[in-house]
Amino acid sequence: MTQGKNATDVLLTESFKELALQRPIEKITIKEITDRAGVIRPTFYNHFQDKYELLEQIILTELLEPIRPLIENRMVNEALTLLFTNIEKERGFYMQAVRLEGQNSFEAIARNCVKALLLEILEQNAVEKISRFNWLTPERTALYYAHSMCSIVIVWIKSGMAVSPKELAEIYDYMMRHSIEDVFFG
View 1 (cartoon, rainbow, N blue to C red):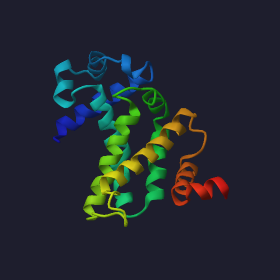
View 2 (view 1 turned 180 degrees about the horizontal axis):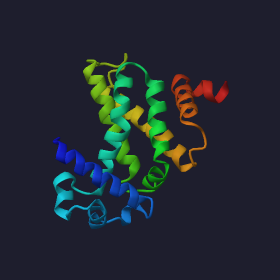
View 3 (view 1 turned 45 degrees about the vertical axis):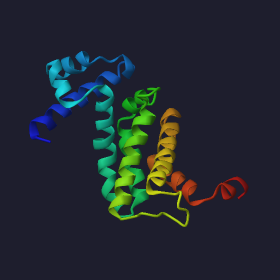
């Protein structure tokens, strides 16, 4: 990506996030985003297909890229704490984003982004077989963890982010390290 494209992406992102604090994302128009960003409408389409691709870019660049090196270095708890902290910093925006439903829901977009990141990491580590079960492919493993991560994030955001990012990372770690039997029956 060129420097100019980065600067425009930042302008469009900030414009979109500011508008999302004022009204539901599904009602925000491309014209409103570009007007606020001070660019012409065709500029938006040189960077993104639609506002949902812009949302995907925000998830990738602001949430997932910063945690990637931590996950790659087996610092998953730290990665999750950073992820949750970055969401908490943009609380208003993400509280609006989780309201998106349907085929362009925040949950679907985030899950696809997380799955892609986890699958890339699995493939970089040449993980072809996760366990003794042939059915449990890297793709299915990445999807499972993407579902679980997105589920806890969505519930946390919708419940008003009542626990700290650090505590939420500890809760997620606990849930992942214990079987359903351990959790239900101690």
